[in-house]
Length: 306
Image 1 (cartoon, one colour):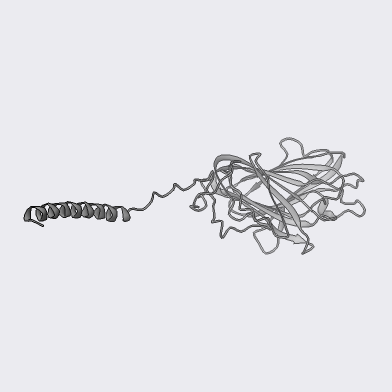
Image 2 (cartoon, helix red, strand yellow):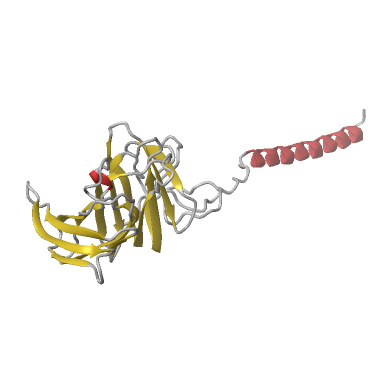
């Protein structure tokens, strides 16, 4: 091979080397790139607690929130319970006997309250008798899908509201043949603490074979401000002699602060029962039918706490 051929071959090999080096550089550059990360799905509502630690009943339902919507989808990363921007109301209904689902005339005890602004909402069965008796409790927010649970000590831990106003409706009934007797506690942020009981029983105290826990209601309340406790109530079917009592619970022994009786009544009148309370204290108010009757009066009562 002459010198001219060697020079041509060397030139061709040099060009090939340059091409290979350029190609190798391109491969090295692309090997360091990561593939684009797919966007994370954003849920319709932020859960107040992580799903991995959320307390639930046997159905595995998470705690309800007033910001929940009907749309399906994963929940966003929780940021914690919103801080309350209104005082927290506390009302516990004591020794409330429930109707049973097998009772043809039975109705769920129904409680309604309205939240103001953001903050935690407490709904819990804190005592049940008999000890192993279960209750079916359902919580519904602004007419949405009800979150129903069954148990002896059901609690909607982590429930919250983060809307300007939301209407919460809670129902309780005994799923067995005999309704249990329960203490059910409520707490919620509100500027005007008021809770309504509908489908209560107002069975006369002298009615044979009827539990006294089916006669009206007993409610323990905590005041925020000094002011008037008010109770408006009405009932069906009967004209009754009734008694309403307010007790002070801020000493080891409860003391009666006020007691009134009304004869031949179908309601507490307008504006209803009123009694002045001190700020930041616990009281107990109860309403009883003193008459005997053979019917099942349906009671509606509205309790407002200062």
